[in-house]
Image 1 (cartoon, one colour):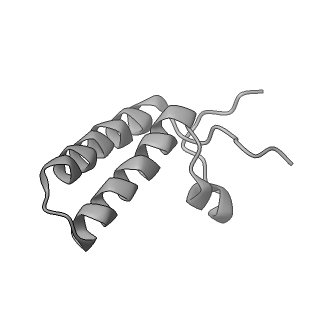
Image 2 (cartoon, helix red, strand yellow; image 1 turned 45 degrees about the horizontal axis):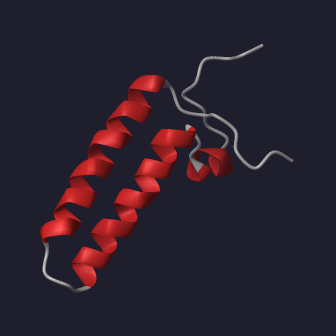
Length: 70
């Protein structure tokens, strides 16, 4: 069983990277607290998705926005 499988297309990866940068930027300027914590780790998760092209939620439900690579 492979740990990382690409299941996102490039436009989706770009969108996730932009949203991740927004969340990480917000976390950089927030007061310490729960919202900063949530924003930071959401940004990290989305950046991981964008870099690897892998979304574990997509994998669980059996969805892929990537074209077939046969």
